[in-house]
Length: 149
Length: 485
Ligand SMILES: Cc1cc2nc3c(=O)[nH]c(=O)nc-3n(C[C@H](O)[C@H](O)[C@H](O)COP(=O)(O)O)c2cc1C
Ligand code: FES
Image (tube, rainbow over all chains, first blue to last red; front, side, top):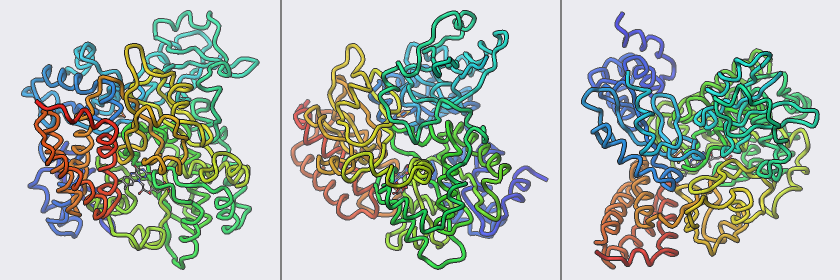
């Protein structure tokens, strides 16, 4: 069975939960392709627009494949107070891409996030599921090196 | 020999895992991973048992591990940041293994099982416990409302969306003492007659999610949860600030877009799937076990006239000693920032402080004497909210900060009501111009008007309160907006 169908088999609950389903699809495929919407809707017994509506609402859900590592850079107030904008500019320069974009080599996708709960070590960024603090222009290179592969 | 090493997200970001690995190599060392005490400026904080209680080594680096124990540790009681606090809700954080059911004990739930539902609610009412998520609504009244509705199905939901930047107390409970949250929810379920509950955790907290899931399994195995008594499920958010608003949270929990529902009906009467639902913040629930164990009157004996108990303040931003400070309500903002936070780091001078997150306000130095409790903050033109305190120094461009708030609102508005959706976008455009020094007096007049419209006609407090930080910035730092190109 193709991976999407396998996921959907596990998601056919009553009542159906569209968000939880999309999260599971994304966990399996890395993203939720627009083309999968009808199949998801059919499996859950809801309309295509129900699914598309949820898909477009949440920042976490993506319709394009992301880079190998997703960097979620914090622009919450604590991080701003600690100079996050300078760190962000340095990251953008280093990666050659801006917020919302993926690097040409598909290694990194750069996104913003508002607070990681790691404010005591601002400025912060989460790479994959790892939370990093004191992300400063001068420590960036070392940090990104850990995620080269 | 037991060595206690925190496993909390911030401690790990400070290097606690590498320290734990290095310490594991010491002969006879038994590593116990704990939550964090919240003195984050000291992390990684490694602790040992001494005849006089726990003592600690601060800011331990992996390379110090081999010789660490040759040095004399500092007794916890001699660390002023911790010694000056009144720890109840955060009593275990950083001390015990968060997943050790026996160490936790569940004694409050045991006691609650011998008390009638109304007695439980009466204790919470006597305690005068007000919600710690932002709106400060009396928990006892909410619980009573749900209890009094006749319905075969009811729900208890913990709001662990913790969206306010600069806050992390919910995260610390979930990572450092998850059973306390579970116990508080189970007591609530018993009080209101619910059999099913959810913890709605934001996706930005992967460690808290893992810990809560593991804790729910252990609590089930220990008989503290179960299909006959109370079943608990962990639900993960998907990156939307608005889903911290209780009705949007419930929509999201049902798997839909996180759109705010008009109130009334209130969730306590018609909540999840239309059933009576208690929604409380993580810290609110985590405060309940002590109230049941020690009695509501004990809780009501602390704090100010209308803000009873303790509040976990979360110090962040440009501050020397960032971390969690649990104290009875009533100290001043200044005491929090200077007596606990140690003031600002070298080279920084105080300029402004944000309290209450992006729906709170930005205060200047002149308001630092404001006492920390719900009512004094309202009087001063702000809200205490979830207790986040973010300090800004002289380098902060207040125009950029103001623009940030409106960008945040525009990003996070659910879009259901026009004032919030369109108002925040227009306001952001004006502040974009302000940053460039191109905004005119008419622009600022329009900004004011947009704020008033958002405040009076938005569907929920996101649109209603989002203009507040900008309003207070303009009020106290208006001069900076006069700079023209
Ligand atoms: C835009 C918005 C965001 C909110 N975010 C949160 C949040 O992240 N966590 C929370 O506990 N309450 C949040 N609230 C408050 C909730 O709506 C609700 O009042 C709270 O969960 C009730 O619990 P409490 O009484 O224990 O505080 C938010 C409210 C609004 C309007
Ligand atoms: S504001 Fe950036 S981690 Fe909290």
